[in-house]
Length: 549
Ligand code: PEP
Ligand code: MG
Image (tube, rainbow, N blue to C red; front, side, top):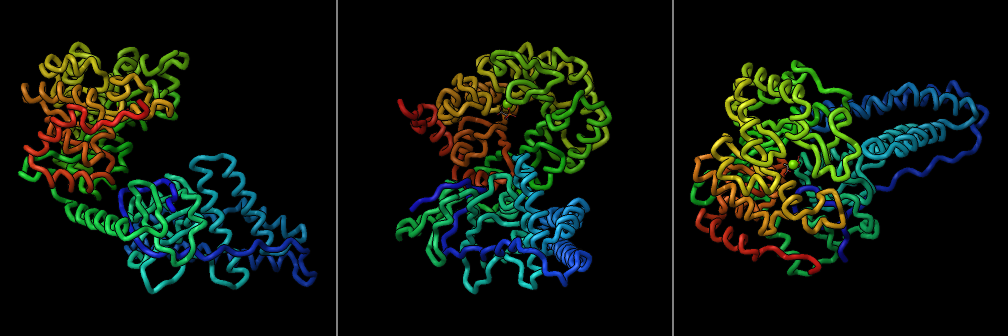
């Protein structure tokens, strides 16, 4: 039986299932015995809340001190605060005043707040599970029973749970837990966030996993987002092999990206905010290949001031002394609308004013951002490279490079996301210091398939030889003019495609930090000659499989 979910990372694990211990029964709604006053019950509740708060804070401290997942500490602290929330206490008190038992009052008050979070949905909706966990702990304390949690076992196992609370995830004994499968939860649930950062093999949102029984053998394949129950020997051997390869991939962390023959392909990280420097460094990024600066602008009613921006850029640059950091100018429009800069009524926003086109119209925003970058650059010692999104040809490239240099920036380049820039690459290479290929948009525009539209999702692959040929035009121009050509779209995170890109002549790859291990390991398996041979086959269309034609 195969169960589909959402995989976190690319790990594989094989082992027997153990289900998470069932939660507590819902406390009954009978009237409170007369000898128990509301005041006495409330002080019992207060002491249970305080105890849960202390317990969670102690776990946060233990995590902080390295006895668990370090990044669990702020989450556990936030949970501890939930147990001291004044609004919850007020609500519990009024339920007690209405004649309910302590257990029932806690249950109803937490359920009410959980419902409100669920109604908001998205990230807040997923916090409802955290709140539920805190409520369960408080009720368990009132009842004098252990809080529901991760089962104990002498032998390694695959943990199956409705969803894991941060408290559970942080205290997992990783010598025993081979993988986590959750029935609920999405890619932004805490289980997913912590699994990702701790490198735990995980598949989340696998609804049919509820039907697995304790002791049943499963393969958890995160890359495929799949759980296979009762696998045959051949499937198990394949999974074991994949697991060994994943372990070997991790062992290369800290080494620079290179092919088997030593040809260097620096591996960089894509980041969205300065704090993302943490995972980037943890996974051994050699620098930053794409900093999406939109986070400074999104949700604001106007562009942030020069100093506010410079502060954020400094915060990032300070984490990478002496290393390359590529910051992209604001990419507003299309899939990244910004009310104060972009028009809401464009019939085809992906073909409208976006990227550099938007910045040209709002030249003050452009100048301020360049000014802030130059300021941050002068005050730090990272190797700052600056690039513009959505540049169509050498004229636009020339405009941007000149403007950037006039502000004192040293390395100014462009993103290649529109096919026209690939066709004009020889001329672009004469004016730009570097080109970074955004394969997400380059694929969208080369194949005329909206990247946000599910109905044309099958076109969204950089394995299409048309996309690879566009990349080759740019790489060739780069080689002829001694101009670096990187890839910073999702394509760089596909280990097999990364080898092909190296063979085409791409000189660096930038990706989400968790993908770095696998790409580094795959590159190390091929010489440049082998990569070139694979690239030739890929450019010929051999590895592209059209769907439904
Ligand atoms: C791209 O288009 O490949 C890219 C890296 O930019 P974004 O995904 O932010 O549009
Ligand atoms: Mg893009």
